[in-house]
Length: 597
Image (tube, rainbow, N blue to C red; front, side, top):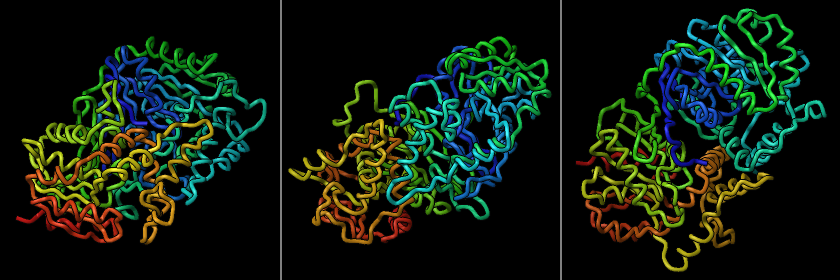
């Protein structure tokens, strides 16, 4: 779940041609490249980064197609991307280091990251000062490789959410057996089961695979809807075709190969293989001990590796929504943007339990027509929870706090004037921005607004936002699935009686529900904080005090239509308009209002 900023850790994007690579950075001292295991992301290495930040500057990228790094162009969906090879991932890391200006570094890799690190030191030995390979994965026979290929079934969202039940079971199984598809005593791990929260974090990493690059046969923008998790096996399958034993004799930099008892067979095989005098193999008694050995080896061998250059803003990419982070008090906010056409920017703001991915079709529709950007609200998507200063009460947070964070981000980006569109509660953020003494808002569009009073308000506050509490059996994933899916069938979603039926074509496309569930799981209980703030919001009163031209928009099927109509009557500067039923056309539906003199 999205948490407060970690002191000293920052996140960045770097542009490589028509794609972007996301990375984390922390610490001071010589440059250390840290490569994560799959199907996780660099978030899995945060504890390691914290442990060594006092001696190294750690740069931890997400591999292409994982975390927040965009997929390689040759990765195809819905297939696993079997045509991607290890060399493609390693070439991408080399290009990443080149773009950052890192001419020399040490490297630390875990599991798949160890395999990539080995190929990296063969590929680019003059750049690498020392290497540690923790849990180098080796398939010893063709039968083992075939079994691994068969075990990694496609991950495809299902209408009933059963793909999430499979995911949780798989996450538990990989902590019981190594490899997880071999069910015998020899493969049984002696480790205990991770905590529910730890398994949940792994699930969120699994469901955060990278965006598709633009180009022939691809999306005209970097769309993600419904793709989260589908590419989980691409790198794992590529690693099966790499033969580490054949390369050990060519290692030219000081290298330690280590691992926990789960890798005893690998370590024994590696120790008996031909290798150069630069390679050292040491068994560790535990995963923690393996990391300790790795750190000690790096400290001893990193030599005079220089400090890496400071991070720079990413280069924009024409025709697509590129990504970046902006520093504000309390952490960083993540945003998408496109500035192909230089205009007053249009800010597209998502609702609670959502992210920039939810509103991406609207944001992308304005590319080439306006400068556009979209922020993940604090505690949602990839933004830090900048509102949590240690004593956050998620049931008393107000919309003004979200608006202040967005204002801080706009100030940091040097944006003095914007047009604003927000859907559902996202519109309230824009209204509070518009009411500020020095407002950046020129024109405001709010769609599907509401104001709940009396018993209705109490019912929404009591029932709409059940806490997301990771359970050992994974039932919280199914809770999230049915909560998001029922939002397209009933209003409010918890009223599943005949009176609650939404009388329109069901808005329950599986890919859309999957995207919303992924956003919900990432936000965790900050989704409750946002919704509760929206349910307390005094929409009509605040609209009466809005000083900017305002468009209140809705759709014919929206159950909140009476609220929107009442809001229009309350607002002296407001117009009322019905939007196209097709969500993807909403941006163009209100563009004329934003461009009116």
